[in-house]
Length: 173
Ligand code: K1U
Ligand code: ZN
Picture 1 (tube, protein in one colour):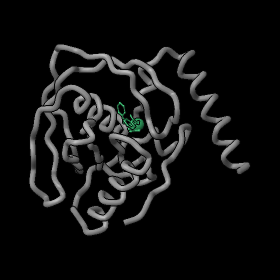
Picture 2 (cartoon, rainbow, N blue to C red):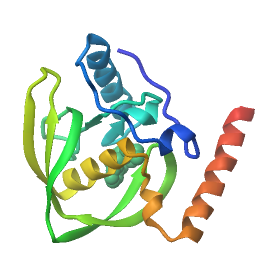
Picture 3 (cartoon, rainbow, N blue to C red):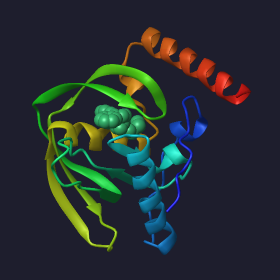
Picture 4 (tube, rainbow, N blue to C red):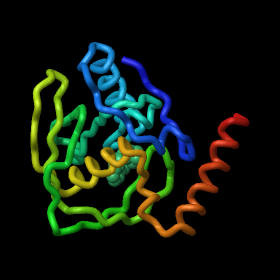
């Protein structure tokens, strides 16, 4: 497995709609493994393919928080929200493509999601709590949307300026 480079906002690849996966190839299965390894190393609870420069509808996540609970690594190809609750929840979200910036985002509290698993089998499951927040955040990435797009323009611009500065500092080394 390999660690992948995570793109930092602003980057045009983070603003694009990803096309669906047509064929579940060995390369795509390896990408899912590499993304899980990259997510755990970051550390993070989710990661979407465009964040590592791969323009395809694949996300990975594992929102198990308790140290003594078994991990639940998930790879979702072509995920689709098939139902959203009217009840909403607020969570202070972060993003590996927008390091060290956090903001409250309101989303449906429960969602039902259908996806194709690594074996090519269609699955469907209802998510709530942090899992629901995370899967919606990651599906947004596949549609070129970032959590800062839910914020007021001034706050979004402030965060974007901080990220431009961070990228310049990192490029200088
Ligand atoms: O998509 C991403 O950039 C990953 C992001 C997912 C996410 C976090 C919070 C709410 C919704 C979606 C992250 O994983 S940021 C890092 C993070 O939240 C975390 C890191 C270590 C332990 C626990 C959480
Ligand atoms: Zn993110």
